[in-house]
Image (cartoon, rainbow, N blue to C red; front, side, top):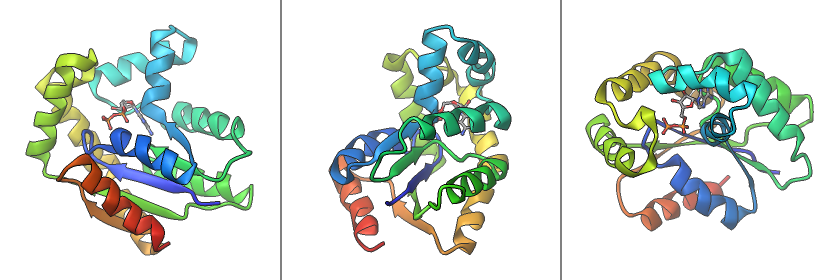
Length: 190
Ligand code: ADP
């Protein structure tokens, strides 16, 4: 069982790389952003609750997100391992994930971070916003707010996983296949 947390700022390429890694290592990919968007599209109670936060560029409250993540893991317990994409994003979520995995005798194997400069990332998001239809990608103010949320709430996770010797940064600038190779290099050495 390997459980990978794919870490990075908005626009770092987590979703793109997850598509390759899940095939290559036969992992169950859980993207909290995708689950929220699916629920928003289908106007479920969860989607209705999450929508206002997401469209402002705020994080969805921990309680809601943690419960959703746990439900999703429970649906796929017969797996080789998980690829967590967009979770955890706060210390409370990281603690909850550790405790939840431990209750099943599992653990986070590694957190792999895709690194890139903010300016490059903001441009990527604006470009994506032209075609993705995502409200949170179309407005510079909302994008800035997502970076502020990242800096305040998500960045402390670097230290959290570093202390556990589970933090592996990777250069997130380059072609998609180059970056997949870098990520695979880390996974091969785990
Ligand atoms: P990004 O491109 O910003 O990495 P995602 O698709 O992963 O986007 O997430 C989109 C939005 O969904 C986030 O800005 C946030 O509002 C919400 N979201 C996703 N994952 C989480 C989480 N773990 N905790 C709280 N909110 C989340």
